[in-house]
Length: 253
Ligand SMILES: NC(=O)c1ccc[n+]([C@@H]2O[C@H](COP(=O)([O-])OP(=O)(O)OC[C@H]3O[C@@H](n4cnc5c(N)ncnc54)[C@H](OP(=O)(O)O)[C@@H]3O)[C@@H](O)[C@H]2O)c1
Image 1 (cartoon, rainbow, N blue to C red):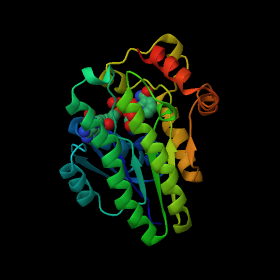
Image 2: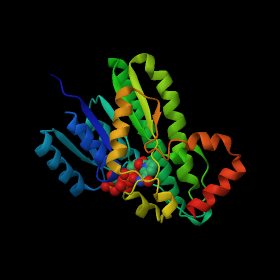
Image 3: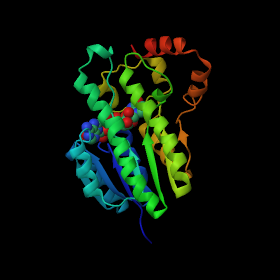
């Protein structure tokens, strides 16, 4: 039987590493990508030992097109694409280094678009394939102190919804995974110290990965892991933007 081949970006830690573990347990072979080689190689060894997975490790900086093109060249044909690599920053927008903000847009938006375009086309040609794009619960409202990050995730959600509509008749599913808080390397990278109220809704990276992959397999449009996070889009829709901004300001400061 032909084994599926999945490409997971940002697999060196957190949610991406857990998604790689879930897919390996489902007998997928993997291409895993991030910048940290040691972490990727340790994961490859773990998955080969525990599941007999064939794992290709690609170390690349995906915030630049050279890294993305190298990944596409090395990964070849895949049945599943998981666009997970991403990061956030926090602080008043004009006080942040613009280089970091633009690198975030490049990784969270540009690279995700480039890979979805490339593999969406390839999957549509063979009339099968699945794309899982990691957005966030931050996609549903603007976020003062995380202005660029929240905007990148709104893009991911909007883009994934539209792409799903276009690709569904061609046999390709697109799912947006929208986690709330998850304790990973994300908080340290973003300089975030989440309050205890926010952390009450935290879900483990493994649970987020399992829920995301299950939704992807069912071809769902989007999924929000964690009972406490699920009402967020409805609450946002019912809340005036002025109040959304005030709430997010107090949560993210
Ligand atoms: N944690 C949360 O609360 C949360 C909530 C909602 C959504 N998310 C989203 O979940 C996704 C995964 O984040 P995480 O929480 O698992 O954080 P994480 O543990 O920091 O993982 C981020 C992954 O992205 C990779 N990455 C970062 N910059 C990269 C670059 N320039 N090139 C290639 N790979 C890069 C990192 O690998 P290297 O450092 O080795 O390159 C790492 O594997 C992100 O898209 C994030 O926005 C997270």
